[in-house]
Amino acid sequence: MKRILVAEDNDSNYMLMQYVLKNHYEFFRAKNGQEAVEKALNENPDLVLMDIKMPLMDGLEATKQIRLKNSDLPIIALTANAFDSDRIAAIEAGCNDFLAKPVVADKCIQTIQKYI
Image 1 (cartoon, rainbow, N blue to C red):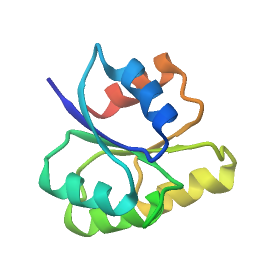
Image 2: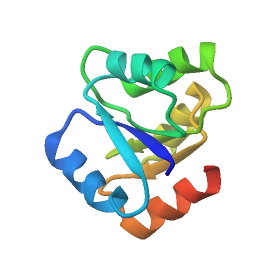
Image 3: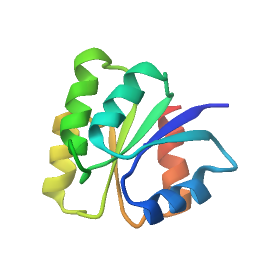
Image 4: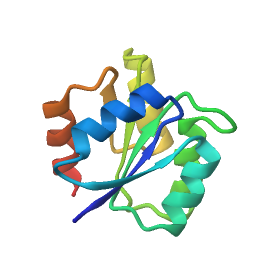
């Protein structure tokens, strides 16, 4: 089964992602950007769902750090800020795609399936 790293500091948002992913994928969590970088590089996920606003290191910087060592790992940005500028910033940081919060389950699964 494919493994997804969910980088999400907010417990209620993580619980929603558990609900969305539980019947489709194995998943594990990083609670901040620094932890996301470490787990993305050391625990071999098949895809990362990356919250943008997190403590210690935001998701954009975490994505840039991951891209320095792994250009192939699919990273999908998750953010409550659904403006075009946020989408552009996520793509420029190295994200493959972008989902707005609150996440719609079907759209989330469809987006993940494009990459794994």
